[in-house]
Length: 117
Image 1 (cartoon, one colour):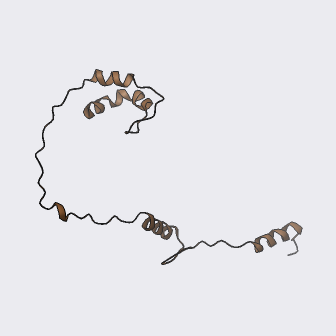
Image 2 (tube, one colour; image 1 turned 135 degrees about the vertical axis):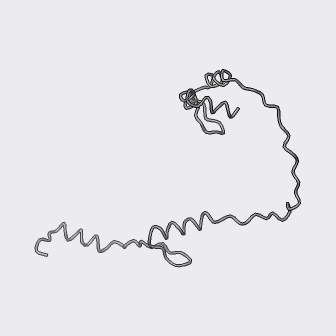
Image 3 (tube, one colour; image 1 turned 30 degrees about the vertical axis):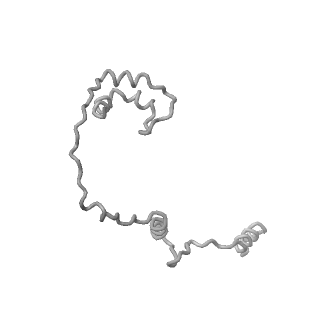
């Protein structure tokens, strides 16, 4: 310790006086040290597997036939006009797609949008 000076001694004292932090997480079932163990405890605690659904009351269920609905034909120009009228700074709807994205990407996605109509 010949090269120890006043600053070095105080650094050592500060290091020795601090309370060491544990890398372990105490749990009911023990301790978790690795990141994988910690992640597994977090997953099983906050995201448990859902229980099996009780399907006993629908064993004899009968379903009606699908009734075809008349499909109205929407033209590409109608979709284009609707996209043009969108306000840019409005909040997105339930699809969470911003209007700006719809306007900028319309040429690439117009065929897909027509399939949704």
